[in-house]
Length: 378
Image (cartoon, rainbow, N blue to C red; front, side, top):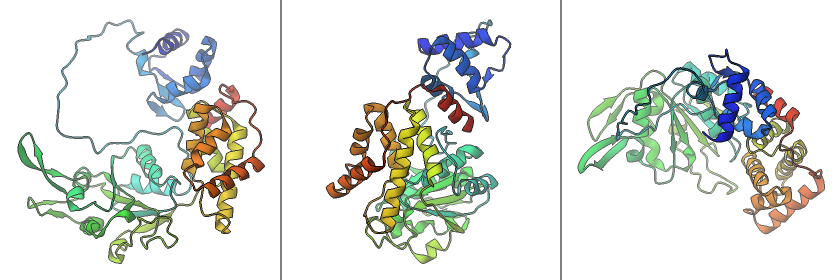
């Protein structure tokens, strides 16, 4: 615990001596923080790192030990080392995440604990994987993420023999672990796989799976479900944008109950995403956020009309925000983040931004009203 945190917690304990639950709203914490002269963005990072009990209420657990009057037993307990990994877990809520599009539908599916295979398709960087992760976080569901590559095979998914402590043992793969625990199995970039992923046919039917190497039969526990993400609909990429995307067997695709098409968010939602990331990185500036979202939307419309061959994703806007927080220079941040494109495209993007952008005069690091508004929306 650093000195700033200690000072803040001590002041909160003095300000609210009867708050034994140690649960506070961001405004209460910011009230004390501002009196101490701390910057809001620094305090915000501390607030959102604490356990969230309900909407707008955080539990400052650190208050329980340093500032209560009862002595505690500080005897250390030796930790037990285990070879069992923690592949399956409930993901942490991301306070910068903005729910939009199919988020509500996906949360309902995950919360229902029904076996209901879902295929999510959409362009790169529009939040497909994040949507699944945060749906699990919101509904307190365990999940495991499997990244598909052209080399992914049955051994990677179902399991295989491993050498552990000099002995050859069978190690269950992520699919079997998810089935046994009744967790959500997220298959990321499923259209990057080869025909070796056909070993999942039975899994997508919700039926028991025979582990051929051990003879075990694993039945899916209640709550098990499969959600896959992809940049294509399993038909390959005609324009060559996703050259590694393969054509998925029709019988395999038919086993997914529904397909969710994920576009890029609209300007209003995207600005909120950008603003939340600005708050996260301590560089809140509504003017810059406006310029970025208008710029990205203009590029996407130009792409649809055939004027450019590349797109600026929502993820790339978040990268620009992080770069801006480091270099404090909007043009440099954008240039560094679009340098992955060919020279002509890069120059076209930079030229477009210079024409539509409103000059950013001052970075708003500690604008109380803006930060309060963003906190209210979380």
